[in-house]
Length: 557
Image 1 (cartoon, rainbow, N blue to C red):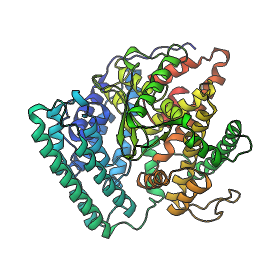
Image 2 (image 1 turned 135 degrees about the vertical axis):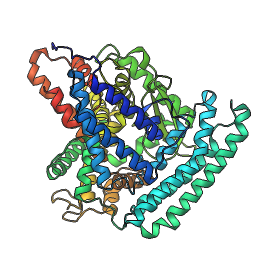
Image 3 (image 1 turned 180 degrees about the vertical axis):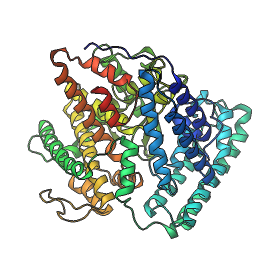
Image 4 (image 1 turned 120 degrees about the horizontal axis):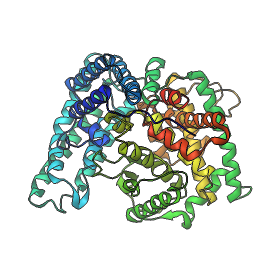
């Protein structure tokens, strides 16, 4: 494939985007930490009404300036489209009041506070003065969040009870984490101040949890579902596209049925004649697929990460030297593994975080390889690491805004799992079954449940599950736990809370994967014998994260 390199000289749009990132980091230090921006490590975000309004005002100013700034070259044209789409969506969400009652159970303010602290938690290399400042800011940050929630309540807007309750639990988990923060190694003379600040943070978290369950819960929104208007905004926010929701719901059922058929065939390779749940239970009990202890688990996933890099480098991808190491870490708590891209200055490596239960017992790992392909290489670590390094082709907003383009990012992660299957890298049938059950099946079910729950849709006939009934959280729980055989129960409960607390986010994986596959197939048909997979991947990733509609436009241009 022969292409003309775009003009990547920095233009006026790039300068505007760079300036916007600096101002956004100052207004949202927690987001800045996730984005890898240095300079705001001593602060936390103001989640009160004034802080929210300041961020919306910045979005309006930048969008107005962007509209008045003509692109000077091809890089500016693409950069303007990416930034403009995000700013317009952010403003629409603010005007719809989407941020007023934000108690997201996956990536809300409480979870962002924990992440802002954990990115500084680097053992002997911890920046103790920054950690002390952020610990000291926890009480004021929570007070601001409470002001924001009260401001919304006075206008008749509150979060649903399940979001309030889950966030109270997360406050207690965060307080426990503060107890374990490594104030002993290397803290030196700051140790007493760190322990005092951690104690104040724990007390503030306990008080905020009591406020949530003992006060705000009394006025909780009785409706879990977002409704169609809010849901469409969520899909736009996380995917950068506006799909036909009825068609997407029907496709989700079809895709789920396809994956389940493939899962049955994969399970039969391991234990012919046995039902899938029995095969999964046997794998969970199999000592060959178990690891005990957080340190042993971390070593296990680190080995998988290192092996994947060595496997794909030079074949279907090129892995730059700066990305040939992933920092695999564990933490206590619930939820999925997640990836944090390298910091802008590369002082923080790309990191995969694995939440583990506090109890030290054997952990099944037969599904872990597919997760590492997703989170590591050729998944997020390669995708977002290349983006961070691409200072010649992308402006600062494009390089650092992966957190705002989940359809692109999570779609690529799921595509990476499927790609490694296509390329024959699931040599152990158990590992491939893990990819199908915890990767493909769960993500297809999310399409069905996310749309079904928020739009209160009926379950179609022919599905074999409560046909004709409208979705409820209890039905969704039974669907995942009993009908699909997924678990454990605590994970399923987290999943249901997650869907209902973050409208549209659960679509990012499967719809993003579908977009990547369709775009690749269109390129293959267009280029015929000249199509080269490695070249396609390099060109696609060089564009940086963006909305899925824009990605399709640029890669079919």
